[in-house]
Image (cartoon, rainbow, N blue to C red; front, side, top):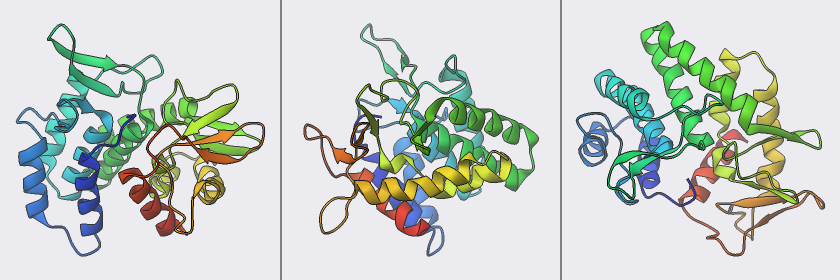
Length: 254
């Protein structure tokens, strides 16, 4: 969650390929390189861990390509191996422990991972009319809303996780976690006005956090609670794959 994942580059190949029609060769290669026979989606650039972001991407790719067998494999692996924390959000990180065993490494969530999982479940429900997918998606959407969305000075913000980002003097945010079309989808299945409101409020966040003449978004930003201004973290990488994801989502929205 705290580092740029090269698997994200593969995600953008899929995302942009949708503009011109799905390329099944991409999906075949993705499954070969990143998904085990048991349904575990592996981040091979990060100590072979599995995180909920990659699970969410895997579910989205599978349902987009109509590969419901792989969709169910990934979903079953998720249910069997990834623990749900006390706030009904998925722990974000699974991998090899120091003692050599494999299991949960961090029960804090990754909000974008939870969002992609819920979104993919809704797409599966729309394609297969299975109410189980809808129920699971709604439970996760409710948890995302209750534990990762905060309101500051009348505006809604999305925390990257439920813990560790809301500081005394600032709030740490990741612009790329705000995905307008996912919020739009959530609004169809959850009558709470928060989803439309956060999409509207995100416009200020996107504009206020873009840097330079090119208006590129940093991977991580902070909202100073005193000045109410956005800035980047000088000790962290400024631009990466996350900035591509942010730019794609923001410009598509406006």
